[in-house]
Image 1: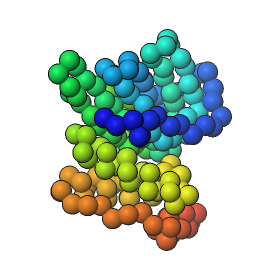
Image 2: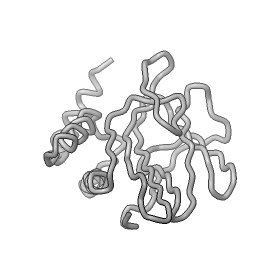
Image 3: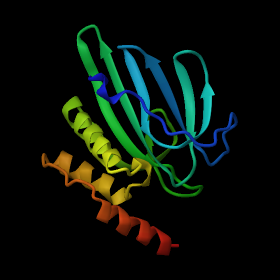
Image 4: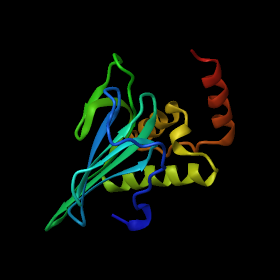
Length: 172
């Protein structure tokens, strides 16, 4: 794992008490052993459990990326990234370790080369001046499907983003 993609978190209004509709994510950071972090997302809740563990929360219908990496004495044993949309009360969801209750999984990638490719795609979106939180969910599904098929995903563009923002304004 490279350190070019160190944990980054966009701030927001945070609370020590999560509402029942908040999607909670358990994070662990034991340097060079277990490293779970949020690559992007606007957290609305954070609870520090101890130096190595904390719980963060996300409001319904917001997007976030969870990176999980772990190693043992012989090297990396897991590396993955999941991009999820926090669900609203009553919405169906998929379960995922460390995420309560679960979420709408937009992208699910494992093995470091593909995880690194997703991190690069996120970096490219940020280079356009676009917050990955605001990216069209369909783009994350596109990246997931292309990587699973062994193909290069298409880059997200300002034009796509503009169209997504306009579509979002007219959808109920």
